[in-house]
Image 1: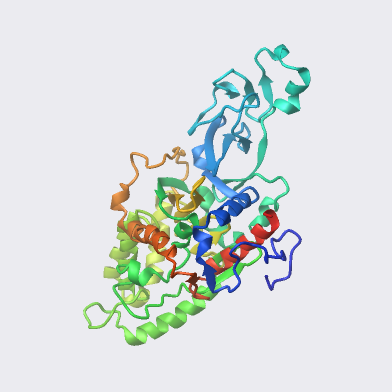
Image 2: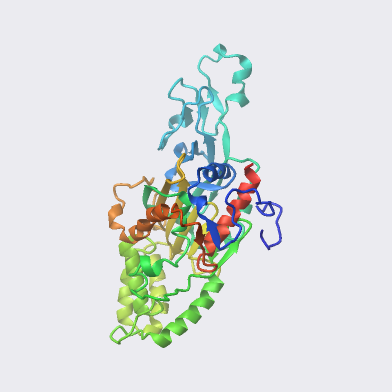
Amino acid sequence: MTELQERPTAITGYDTSNVLYRVMDRLLLPSERYYDQAFFEAEKEVWMHVWQFACHGTEIPNPGDFTEYKILDQSVVLVRQTDGTVKGFQNACRHRGTALACGTGTYRNGQVVCPFHGWRWNLDGTNSYVYTKKGFRPDTVEQDEVDLAEVSVGLKWGFVWINFDPDAIPFEENWHGVEKVLNPHGFEKMHVKWWHQIEFAANWKIAQEAFFEAYHVMQTHPELALFQRDDFYPPLGNYASEPEQGHTWMAAAMETADSQEWIASSEKEAPSDPDQDGPITQSDPVGFVATLKTMWQGSQSLTNERQVEIAEEVIKAVPNDQFYEEFFRRVYDDAAARNVHIPPPDPEMSGHWTAFPNYTGIASLGCSMTYRSRPHPTDPNKCIFDFWALEIPPEGTPATRPQIAADDAPLWDDLWFLQQDNSNIERMQTGIRSRAHKYQRIAPDLEKMIVNWHQVLDQHLAKYTK
């Protein structure tokens, strides 16, 4: 139960006592939540009432462009309108249910045409033609009966979002709290550099939660941890949250305060000169450059090749105490020279977030890695997971419609940084079903995103399932 004052549209205050495998202790999550079939069936209903991102806007750049979004056994077609807005429709002909979209494409001449019997609709979903209409009983083919069934649509951060529930929380209200830390990044300017999709043999929450915390960095990403061991504790443990909504983010104010304390303690113990004995920390310019290079080489995202080159140039050119000021100045100057408009730093922006139910990402200096996890239609031990690399291109660059594992995308096997994360996901699903493993043990600060998320899921289950 949230301690914050309830807003009228917040998902809070529901009695969760009848929720199967509910969170009774916020630091002990029942393992069955990740594999039990009955819990999975109850969870399905939640997806019919939440705002979920269905596609990146560049998938449908021009009027008449469409793309299909699938969630569980439901299919939605998203169509770009002539005025630049987007409408979403249940992907079913009003005659006998034939899917009107498969994958991504363009409806020619402003008409959606059923491939089976030729019924047609305008891009806005209004029916424009019923073949041999006089052959039907009149009341079954009245206009409101044959117009396409709509789903709610919202546009934000360059993504298209949908909701099956017309009475759901209003779109803008849904982002209360998290919008202030994501808006400054300029996501609406970003294009897709590459897009990979994987079916994991793991529950969708297991896959998603792998990107909810930095506690795993020391063991999973030793290069990013600069090969430190023991109590490696980067300043990523403190998060702000909107408990009523399920959104959690690395809070800029907390991050700054914690970083300064962590940097100060690190510098007392670790010399920044790589020629001296002792560990190098991420606070040191040398460590920063190594980290930046690691992220680029292993993920082809989160930064870009030019930013890495600039970092390597600056580390050789200026004293350590001038590195950061010079690095950021050159990054912004270089981007401007290439007509790339990186938003200026903002004290509110956050570099790591999750927005309920399944929007997670990391962003910095006009670059982002964004994740989406979706449940398998029938099996709680499987999921569909998407990875997008996003970046702000030069002003005026035409949008290229992204494709899953496009020909120009990095080969998945080359993205070793992401593979390090993924190697643990299916292992967790195996282990979590062990009879000896009753609970997931959660660290209250380091894994706060997970705690908050599950508590909000229980609120949805209490509201929408019986």
